[in-house]
Amino acid sequence: MPYTPHTKDDVQKMCAQIGIQSEDELFASIPSELRAKSFDVPEGLSEFEVFDNFKEFASQNDTSKVSFLGGGYYDHIIPTAVDALSTRSEFYTAYTPYQAEASQGTLQALYEYQTMICNLTGMEATNASMYDGGTALAEAALMAVRISRKRKRIIVDSGVNPIYIKILKTYLAYHELEVITLEVKSDGSDKETLLSLIDESIAGYIFQNPNFFGSIEDYFDIIKALHDVKAVAIMSSYPIALGILKSAGDVDADIFCGDGQSLGNYLGFGGPSFGILACKEKYIRNLPGRIVGITDDREGKRSYVLTLQAREQHIRRDKATSNICSNQNLMALRATIFLALLGKEGFEKLSLQNYNNSEYLKAELLKIDGVKIYNQNPTFNEFVIELPISASEFIDKMEERGFFAGLRLETLYENFENRVLVSTTEKRTKAQIDSFVASVKEIV
Image 1 (cartoon, helix red, strand yellow):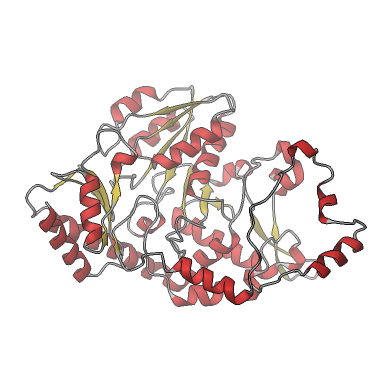
Image 2 (cartoon, rainbow, N blue to C red):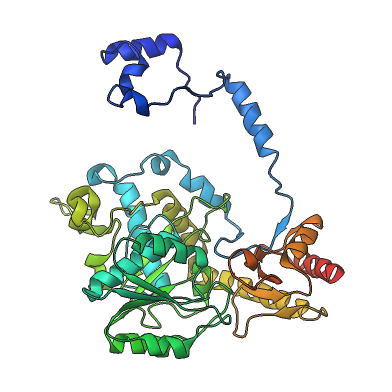
């Protein structure tokens, strides 16, 4: 972005143009006692000094280590074409497509995104993205409440990302809704307790497959029990896993949600990403966020529009399906390009490569005395290891050897002091995995 400083003369001219004497008058509506008394702002820098500062800050980032981190954000290969196309000015600047006649290119890309997400998730309708995976899950819960009308209870599986659960509870805090979170007893769902809770007071059940620990489970019986009492089944998933696992549509879930970072977007220290939210067609009017539709204009030409807008905050405000449906067009566009480049067969191969790398790593770690695998169920591309030393000590020693070895689960769960969530993607080579295993052997 160009460097655009304003001189004192520039500021004076702008003030004169809008009829004020100084910048202070811009804040006249704020009571004096509420205004900041002073700002600790350094003197301005030239463009070259600013770039030098940025380079100095950037040099403090250690990008040399090999990452085995997972837990919701993953280190995947991103084809160069994703950057080349998504940063073209036609896409990069045409961000908000409310004026359809001037936004046909962006709307077409988002329509294609919706088509691909429906194909991937097995759902019949989707919006053009949400803020992130956590907010998509929270909005899915609110959808379930609207669909079930008067029901006020939501069950959340213990295998759902704990960060998402915190976001969910924040969203629902002032909705007079009860969130029932199943206790973490193992890496799998406590189905016996769950089935005992499902009754006609339940609006919906949220589960994650693969779950936060990487485990894969069969939820057919749970979903049937939910539908028997007219409750909503909400499935959260890691999109890459859907290349080889059954989709939400395959298991008859009603709503799908997930985070799209793994679809052509960088880790970026935790963002930006985008949220995926899709559902069965009969629930589309409860679906928040923008929805792009296709039609013919009065000359018979194909055109794209934002449809069902009466649900939205920019029209109905307090009666909208959501007042926080921040959309991530650019990130969704990157996902569209990424999915188009891979195609159906390429996506399946990508998914298998993630799975195979993980299985190889798991098998090699099991050969080390003192290392155990926590997961009782099959896993996708991440799993939990139990160590004879503390997770903190293990992570620190692995970092000294050039690895971000995984996620310390003690930061999220009680009594997990010696457990680490380890993840592999297609980006990890056999040599890197073997070196990781050798380092683990040295430490434990």
